Image 1 (cartoon, rainbow, N blue to C red):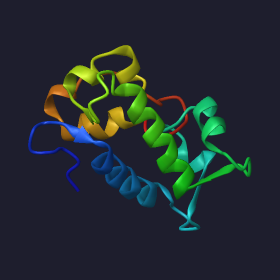
Image 2: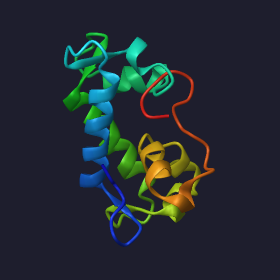
Image 3: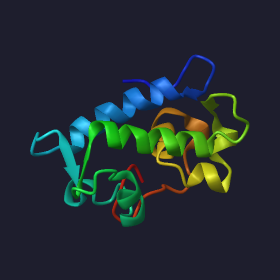
Length: 123
């Protein structure tokens, strides 16, 4: 799946579609949820805790996509509804879950630090 739009940006719908695919790949036991083990290397514990709205120790797809949307909006510094290399070049953009998806799709974003490296979401 290609999240990058024709104008070199990633919009929220494309980011969520790519994140939905990522969720399915990470869900190794195919139970419809992601636990900390499945998210290891993709989301730090703090982000996982914040995203786990029902506090059951897992993220269902809705919780996961809500975390992606929150990160997307935090990275969208100019509030234009898209992320581009400039948005991802900011500290807030580099700290967003969506940065990894954009790094894969947008050559200009490559080389930016990955975000949730320690043990969580899309780092």
